[in-house]
Length: 231
Ligand SMILES: Nc1ncnc2c1ncn2[C@@H]1O[C@H](COP(=O)(O)OP(=O)(O)OP(=O)(O)O)[C@@H](O)[C@H]1O
Ligand SMILES: [Mg+2]
Image (cartoon, rainbow, N blue to C red):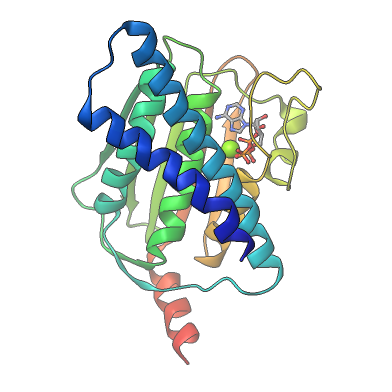
């Protein structure tokens, strides 16, 4: 009920913006910029609402783990479609690629997509104009894992905050005058989702020197999990 009330008006703002863009071109650069702002901010708000709703579903034990055969290349395409406009807006170079040998995995398509959108969204958000973000997907036969790696050249995270940022509602910069919007839920959800797949999430970073987040998804364990789920 609540989710419906929160999401419906926002989705219609987005739909009307898309309609406007389809039916008329902006009359000035200022108008074009305004349209982009409406779209980007509505999307940001939709992400936040979705994360808060998802967190309460997790707590209530109402989150389903829908295991299916997932082609990570498909997810990559969808993530790119969402993140590229944000990157353009922030003047950040965004690139993603998947190695040719990456196998199909057994996992929850929507959850993996969510993890990548969160990580890439963060990377773009915390990277100043002129920087770059790269999403790279690779397979590691020695551990039978697929690695989803999001690297950025952004502001980085201090050692003392590197564990904390995976906790709920934690943001490295918690000052009232915070420059970056968000609820501080993205990484804690990403962690829960990675763990649901029998995987993990790790971070390498230094303040001012960018960050690298790596999600490891074990291909075999996912298969076992999938079996257990169906029992
Ligand atoms: N790529 C990154 N570079 C620098 N800092 C980051 C990066 N990713 C996350 N952080 C830090 O970790 C904090 C927690 O991230 P998280 O995604 O959980 O929350 P958020 O992005 O602030 O809000 P939300 O994801 O809920 O919109 C961020 O507020 C930021 O301080
Ligand atoms: Mg985030």
